[in-house]
Amino acid sequence: MESLFNRVTDGLKAGKSMDDLRYELLNQGFLADDVDEVLAKFTLSNLEARRREEKKRERKFLFKELFDRIGYGFGAAQFVNILFWLSGASLFFVGMFNGLRVIFGIVATHLLDRYKNRTSNKFIGRCGILLGFSFLLMAMFTVIHQPWLFGLALLVGAVAAVCYGNLYQELFSHSVKREKRGAILSRISYVGLLITGLSLLLAAYIMDRFPETGVPVTINFLGMSATLRAFGYLIAFEICAIAFILAGYVLTFIKGSYPVEEEPLKGKGLLNMPQLANGFHVLMSHKFIFLTAMSSSLITVVQTLANSYYGLFIFSEFGRSFVNVAWIFLIALVTSFVSPVITRINARQYGTLPLLVFGALLMSIMPLTYYVNPTFLAISIATMVGVMGSVIVGVASSIFLNRIPKGPASSQQAT
Amino acid sequence: MTSLFVLAMVPAGAFAAQKYGIGQLFLGLGIVLAFVVMPMFFIVVLLNYKKENV
Image (cartoon, rainbow over all chains, first blue to last red):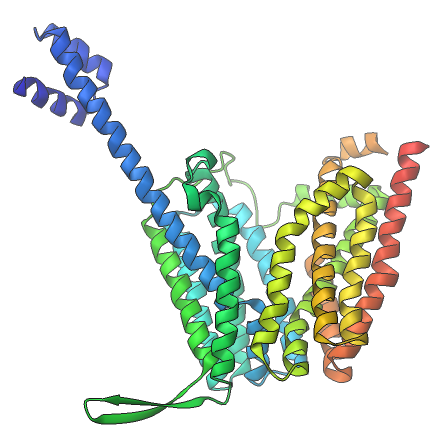
């Protein structure tokens, strides 16, 4: 029996299939029952090993997700904008760099789409680590009051965030099947929301407890004492940086296949001119597609500008408190989570297109309330309404744009 | 197209925020949404309705 076991081990190591091995061993004079028994043991141990491997991978994904959510909470966009302003940047500078961040994000998304099949887990993980370091740099440049360098770190972080976020989503959905996700991983959007919310509040508390001027902290060690100035934003952004660095580091160890595009890149330039021309033709041949594209672009501009200043406005209007900013954006976070469900119900009831008008109306309430009635309650409700409106417009326009014809031939048929 | 539009419009908005204050910028953004974007979407709905029913 032992020699049979050794032969099966050697055969499997040599890459022979179970059927070939069975046939070979039977020809060598082994009993069929003995061969089947040994092969069954191997099959079971293989299955167990695969299951163990899957569990290990799932655990790594879970750790990565949890670190990510902590990072997103501690490094919320509104805190970044406030710190940018505190680093000495003017309002113009804050808005300008947020605009550049959007453009860099669009360009990075475009490049990622084109060179997707050259990426790997390690590349995505390294982008996460780069994102972490960009937060560390932002905190440092706030301390030394260098707005230009802060802006550069912000742009690097924007590109890293796009690479990290977009590619990871594809890797995750390709590597871990929905039905094979564990109890926490399958509910990660709910658990993640809770962790991000708590991290957001904790970061705001730390930044309020140790304000931007710094609080002297005395450390006594072995009879020696040293006094340091503790900055809340430095602590919060360091936690955020560590969380992203760890998440990226964990990702580099995950063994998973990245979905590879079958279409070769050969012959395609940076800009796909035929595709661009086709898109332009579709845009110009339908009045309503042109109008939708124009209004979507306007909405992007309005959202970019408004999101650059909402946090700053709340921070300066309500006693320079980060906790107030955190509460209002926690409301926005929860609203953005429940809004898609409400949108889909309404889209079924009233149709997609009327929702665009309704969404734009809700969106306009938010900045107008900030101007007309800047009280905490009014701003909280307006934020809720505005976020719901932007989700409605986003979902409705994506449903609408998915319905439009893609090629010139079909567009002519449609008209 | 969105990139070019953002590239052109965001600095103008940021300049307005710097010169007239964030409150005034919010007023302007609210007006753009309520009186430019919303009517544009309304026209889209009407055009689509006409296309489907004529």
